[in-house]
Image (cartoon, rainbow, N blue to C red):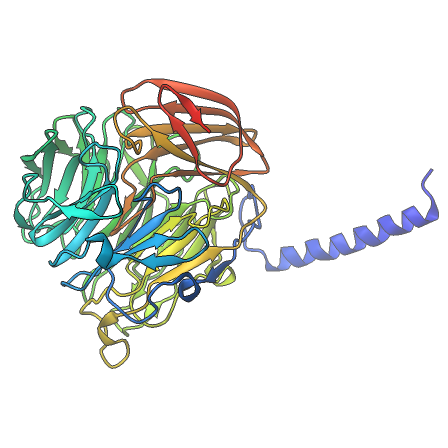
Length: 516
């Protein structure tokens, strides 16, 4: 029999729970039950100045993460466009970065556009390929912290490229280049010591590709690509065939106009990759971004409204990542300047509630960005190796739509946001395949008590930026992975059981296992 004190405590507890429930009923919008009605909101700190970044207003054209010197700490490159000097930042491992642009040899003159890291010489060192209005740059890693431009020697020529992706389309163990210029998408095949152009795909007229994002969206084992082509052209979904690509845009139900960028991610944890698309046009006519859910049969359904991605204006790029480590992919959106007033709009963070819906928490997370400039690019990385995702954002697009009297030429500062961390565990994987030292083309499934998560290791290009060569999984309350399943690029599968959560990337080498 309960004591009078116990009964009194139960009565008080029930009274306040009833009040809380009544208040929730009065303020809550009608919705079906959520798996996590109030997600664990991550909080970010602007550490740009403390980390050693240039904080002046400047031009930006993408940010690319990679551990170029193999010291275990992620470094990053910032493109500048228009002949402006690019920057390479070396991670010192203490929360700060050193600008090594001049000493590294990456400051080759030219009007650079899209750049991408990858081992194009197949020597185990990561290189940087850049499209240029002129002679393209193949900056080959010399293994001593410096790079040598060998674009001409490798067979690349003069062009007007805007974007590039790296993928092993024909599965010969060498990374090919999917190249977007002002009119075509071109495939450069890697022959080992030379690249040769083997065809163009998806003629685009005078408005060429502006971004590319690769993934095997139909699960046939061959890499496909989404190509964004603003301002007025239809964008492309290219289905890989092994030898080239076919235009699958209409068949997939995606024949739309004016896409800025696309990003792939399995937001609903159903085992296939969904697509978030941003739209942006000069001066007019842009659309809000859209979320397309993969139906598993080669087609996509627009679920923007039901997912509560409630944006009434355009955006520049979206970024999938589990920013609170709860096992569900969230979405960070960079919005950029409004064409009608010239102001940089606040960036947004949509937390995944686990029921195919999102809730926007950008202000709470402290990651809305500066009012000056124009946001145009972003990429996450766990640069401080504490197990959660930090975000690097470029705010200097330099677009013509800016109002010079308010935001001169849309120039703004680079921003690095450090994630304070949440309660969830995480695991990060650095994959070493027989075919590629950075695992491009590898597929991974992670099983925990809450379900299965799926990722692909691609070149990680999202709009103008690039994610690091690491796969990140939030594990929620699980302190280990029950089952880790890896399908390497050559189709060989390996499984591992009871893999502990980790903060520093866990290296897994094909045929060897987990490397201490």
